Length: 152
Image 1 (cartoon, rainbow, N blue to C red):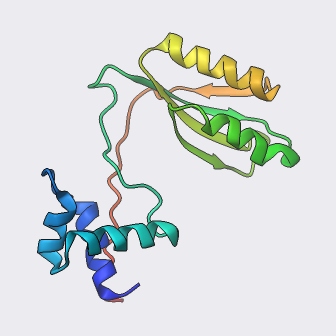
Image 2 (cartoon, rainbow, N blue to C red; image 1 turned 45 degrees about the vertical axis):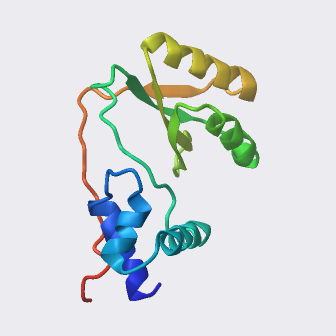
């Protein structure tokens, strides 16, 4: 990554412009065209530096609910089960842990009944019934931004 990539990443983490043409606005701030910004972001996504670019919303304010789930997945089925879990639109994170319950994911939906239906469908489609549901008792939001221009 060059210094311009680092500036771009800092900008989109902290000050993503909420305007009709955000990439054009970003380009103005960085001395680039809108197309150059889009190309740079696409390249950073392809390289795995950017995993996701999108808004983060307070789901409870929108009337949604969520839960954290943990599945006990046989090691030889991890990719297959991950594909099933990830096929549901309400799954926002899915990651492996070193534990008997080795696949953890968060699930968001409009209400409790929806979450129960998705969990039931995951169990049916995977054949795995050992699933822990760990709903949050109290939300904690941690702001994580990486200053990519800071001196070492």
